[in-house]
Image 1 (cartoon, helix red, strand yellow):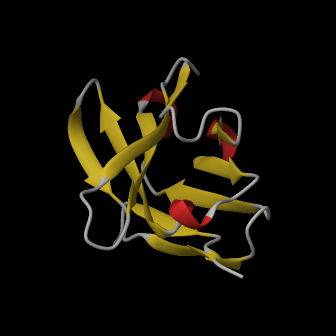
Image 2 (tube, helix red, strand yellow; image 1 turned 90 degrees about the vertical axis):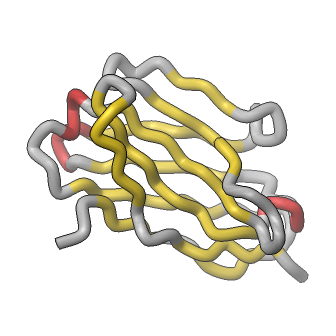
Length: 116
């Protein structure tokens, strides 16, 4: 059984928006730190946004002001709202969880393509 399941990816035009979701099957979700990473073709996986168990958020410089990470502990779900999308935002987006830096899990990824 997958621990993390992402959804919401797709094809969008430049300037458009998408919202990604990642749902956890673990009962300790509210205690986990959650993050989104992106991997573009030929590139390494890179950090995009994170939200701690205490709701402290941080972002990569490349997405500040355009992306918003949030969580709903009642639904065991973390979201990534992506606005003003650019072609360079294209890639596979992965959800990651950890508990105090350990017990790390990754989702299977969801493809986001920004193209006209």
